[in-house]
Length: 70
View 1 (tube, rainbow, N blue to C red):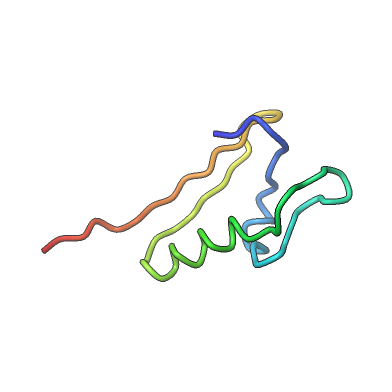
View 2 (view 1 turned 120 degrees about the horizontal axis):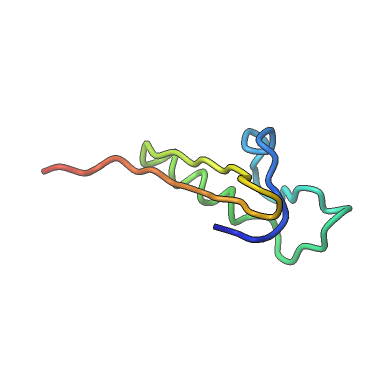
């Protein structure tokens, strides 16, 4: 859970290296690699990422990874 700026649903497909959303509106530190790295690691491991803004200023990010069985 994050109590910061909202994350629009259409941004999920636009996640990529050095991509920062609404930079003109919000000051952001960093290079914009965090979500891109998470998305790539999940793709390599057949996982998924969902991000949804629930209420004003509240965003939930969830990851799913398949269970490994031996």
